[in-house]
Image 1 (cartoon, rainbow, N blue to C red):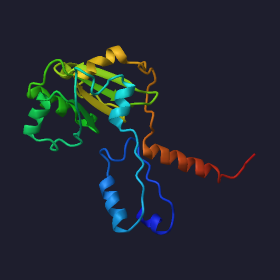
Image 2: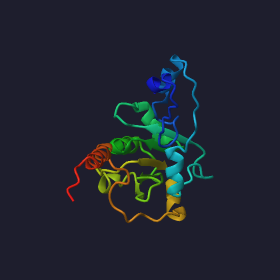
Image 3: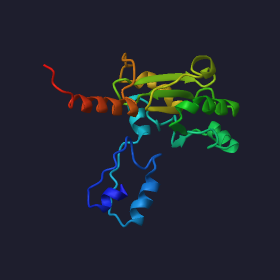
Length: 205
């Protein structure tokens, strides 16, 4: 970003979701400010809001929750024991970003700290795409039905009483499509390389 901006080019850093929620915006801002580069931040739709809306789960529904916590557990030591206890007892809706691979740990810690049985877990898999699937389970039944399951990205986790509203307000049917909506970067790069190579092949016809 800095290299091309200092060359006088217009640089766009495009990100899925909102740039200010669980992204590396701080590092990027520090770099461009240190180099006296003028910039503009264009807000986007956070994954929490987008996925919840597409799953029919109002995050702060009256009588169910009055606040939302945006969290991440991309590695197991991010959250301490005292905070797990608080998360298990709060009435806030919990939304976990980038945590599908550590979901077993999330559920285990909440159950260990006696989270209320009427708080459900929703995994919104490949959220807001034609491949979207919404998986809902009681946290105390998670170990029997979903533990160890691998979810496709992008995936968001919602925990709380509001998850029960999905059954009533799910306006988007479960997708019957299988596979990944977003291809892995390596596959996209390989396809681009093959396509570029094909344009330079001799014409034998």
